Amino acid sequence: MLFLFNSCELDDPSFTVDVLPVASVEMPTEFVLGETYQITMKYFKPTNCHTSYGIYYEKDLNTRVCAIKNLVENRSNCAPIVNVLVEETFNFHVTNTGNYIFKFWTGTDDEGNDTFIIHDIPVN
Image (cartoon, rainbow, N blue to C red; front, top):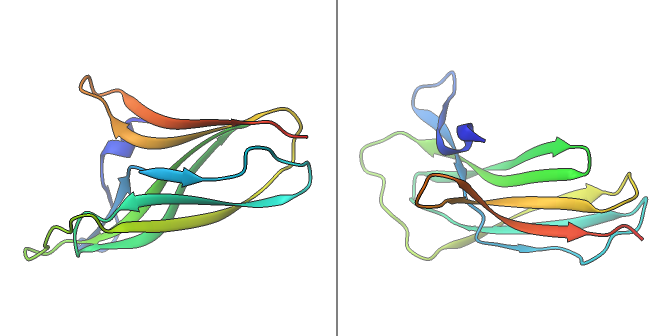
């Protein structure tokens, strides 16, 4: 998970990709096998140089780790943005039985450990 804290370089040095913390999540409380569900993550846009760049999504058996990706223009006149909540939505197709554990990355604590909003969703 350590890479979540760092920007990654693209081939174009005028842009980087930042992984941003999730502020809140909207998702169902249960799943049905074979169905598809919309999951919405909300996050705060840090500056006017940040642009939506999709979802960070890591899969390990029935556990999913999710966060927000933004493309950041590297320029000197980026201005902070205060309290602008942005939504990113993705569709999740249920392919396994048992519970799905979704871990939405919310940043790090004072010791540098990753923190998460965790949803344990049963499949009925």
